[in-house]
Image (tube, rainbow, N blue to C red):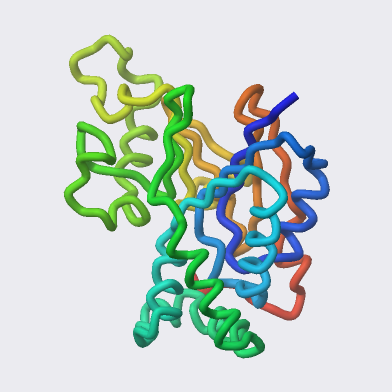
Length: 243
């Protein structure tokens, strides 16, 4: 039976991604939705992109653009790497690209260019890296950077969870637009959680792979969860992202 599998932040951890997908036991009919932040952190960012491009040729995949991916996309297009990007994992990404030819880098850039800012499926479920601020939905977002940077959606869901009924006029309109919303971007480790978290109808699948956590995947029809090992155990000589 076809599964829709949502995968959280990866941050250059190819070993963990391969391990995770092996544990899922992918089937040809599976639909994969990646929530972004494929690069920056561990040493195999370029390898992760190679792997995802190959996966895209074999399976039905949707790739959402994360804030780290936007940084890398800018750099691949010829812009200088910003200090904030280099400090937050970009240095390891730049190093991973040293082995690639110019032609391979252009293929990666084209892959980044094809990524989605967000995706809505036939069940009215939204998949986005971070969030949106418009009460009319991401189609009406004024600040496009919110797709990959906004944390207010998640913070609002946490604050509202189980406090106000959906039929109350106080209930946030943003949360009523979609049956469910799937995000990454904000590590659940910040809340002492190592598993994906739910607040209202929002699921957060960033379980801290860039730091001391794991990569997580969820089959959204049934909510079964798979995880890699703690990423740092797979890269014992590395530190991951700075913060």
